[in-house]
Length: 217
Image (spheres, rainbow, N blue to C red):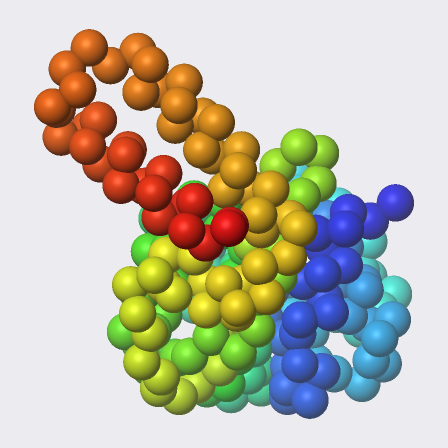
């Protein structure tokens, strides 16, 4: 069974793109879903680990999907207008994109599923002249995921929107509220173990909890 997270990434991708360039394809399940949705769109999977790459190659061999054993967007060209960076952290995402900023001229959509520092990811791509087109939050196997679609263009965002996500903040669905309710419980646990109530850490946790309470109320 394909993970719900992968299904949601597939759903957020605009199939009107010329091609989709999936970085960190693992076993290729996202590419298989996309091929099932659209038989003609150009697809490429990039994987830098030999084991997963072999599975990727085997899994998509009959589906007219290109594959590459490499680290990032070295092979990206004007045949692709969408990049997917899923299943990795903020630092990896920034390193991959920053190596070839010039190649963003080909790109109309960037889809990310960062496992760390999602707010910094938003800020990074906004500063590269992309705006937030769509956002999805879900919980799977006890883990919260935020999937973001960026499109080329400029919009202004508040600090709160960058932190929580402008679309997620507007919708405030059950999963969103549950995530920050659980985070506040964790904050309470951390604060109970801090001896110095005047420390910067304690004060910053109070402020974080206050902000979370405000958005989930």
